[in-house]
Image (cartoon, rainbow, N blue to C red):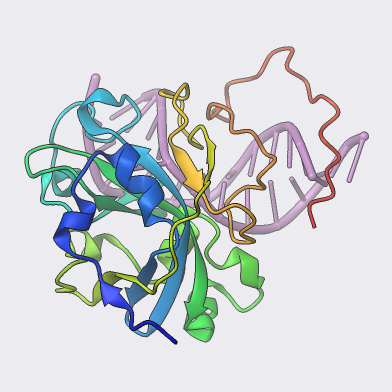
Length: 224
DNA sequence: CTTTGGATCGTCT
DNA sequence: GACGATCCAAAGG
């Protein structure tokens, strides 16, 4: 009994990013003929979150974050990468969920074509910029409505419930707001951006040096 | 497995 | 000018 995938209603997205984020796990992102299941997300709580792009108020870049819930907020970073978020705060407020990793369900060949022929399956979409490249998401899709699918991108529910007990850690790649555990993921997924054992640390710039914190004997966990 | 450094440019101070 | 909600290749254990 294959439940017909249904597009999520606007009301699904309305709420605090920290509440909506774990609910997005196992939902299916549809981009053209490609489909992928969300397996890892992070919440960015707008005005009260120093790690959020919206922390210092609206700008030209983050304008979409202040729009209605259910929009795709796409930003360009590091001079070469795109990352995708789903907005969830009421209009006028900024709150969004970063899509950090997805599991390809359909359109494998198209994704590999965009990512590179030599790229392994699990490396196609296991990172926020990787999934954008695989799904051809760039700034041209900033502001796309996931509910009306006005630009061919939508979010659906195929009947797979979010994990009852999602994995949870601090967010990855940020230098402030690291005290909050606002990253959620599907336990056991092979498409996470980090191994589950890995503990996120504050982003250390290549120039900054961790004095004294030399590598300890790591966990010798045989992950697989 | 882990760590390190380079790439590259829009955005904000 | 400085800094990224990153990724990749290379080198070391």
